[in-house]
Image (cartoon, rainbow over all chains, first blue to last red; front, side, top):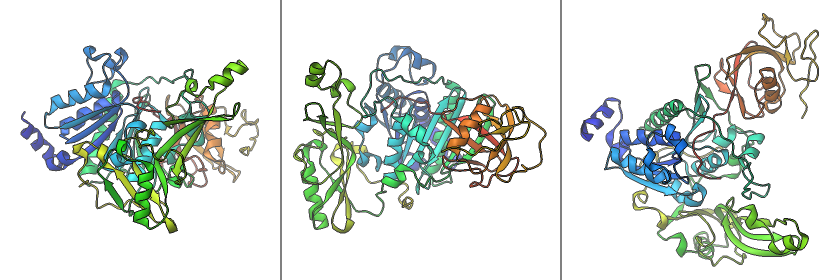
Length: 406
Length: 122
């Protein structure tokens, strides 16, 4: 069947070739579900796909991942998945990104996507993706597996309910379980392994992409609901989530809708927080504070020797070993761990404002909120880091209101 | 927070539990609870399909109630969600049975949240 014939079949389903070709989607995770999602996106002819994953392919992945072959073991999941998707359709633009998503994608990336598919295995990454989607008004379809069970959770503008709304306190604290109480990576933190099935991965991946295709066409989807299949008892279900007035994401995250966004055609390595603050002051007519896209670690403080070592890294990227104070640990003959100093906003008096955003460890494609006098706001989008295929304005979903709840 | 417990006469689970259960298995109870602070619902174990008829406090928040229901259904207490299948919604952390207008003999399902996929960050 030719590509043309394939698209004719899609049109019989009520889907339009040009809508799918113009669509830009982010697939976070190239594991079992991510493989299925990517395969389906390729079959539909979705024009621009970005896939993020930090892992290499292992033997155990082969039993669940439709795009991987034995010869791929040891290679990066995102890169192989992208290669295989291109084999379906050479006209598709598929960009693999290798690394931790929080270190690779700032908000300027997210606002260029029409749709984000979460194919993740942990809660904190889901919370981070969810936050960016809510902020940027991007539909977030999240899939999950557990033994023979599968779930698809749908969150879309105006985000009456978001992923964080459905978590309880126990789950939110569990989200950081791979870390120490200071959000340092602990080598000894146990990783939980949940058995999953390739059959349910196929079902969940299929549901996700079908819902996504409907969303791209402006058709009704079950926003704020979960579709589930409990494989142990063969029970399909659909259930509404309820808004959570205490949801930390809704309480702390402001959607960008209705606020002016200034597009900066500059790379993160070529601009500093001082320059962003100056730009904001020009635009808003007075001194500003700069709200960071993601929290920044800027120092390690040791209470033992009362010293601070400057260190510029994204939150969650530092290991316990790196946080150890070498001097105090040697003197006291036990591990002395220094406290990371974290910044969520910059006021203009910090000593590191003249480092580039990249040197500070901030992710490429940052979306920075400047808050000026009388709470006036403007966003600066660092677009120079975006690949060419993500630079044009979005055309899908622009008619929707994204006011959030607050 | 401590969930209020209403001991049931002759019930084996009346001591220091948040759930009043009749012998831990489905019963023929069809009358509403005689105590206005309690409600009788059917709860299914989403992994095994086992169902129990439980008499539960209407004003206990889910974060207190779910571990007690899980214990009755012999499920692990963490990472659970309760769905009201009759009314088509999932209870949130601070919801109570009363706040969501749960009805006598509503059919609910307790299941684990499906979280696995791929490791991509944090």
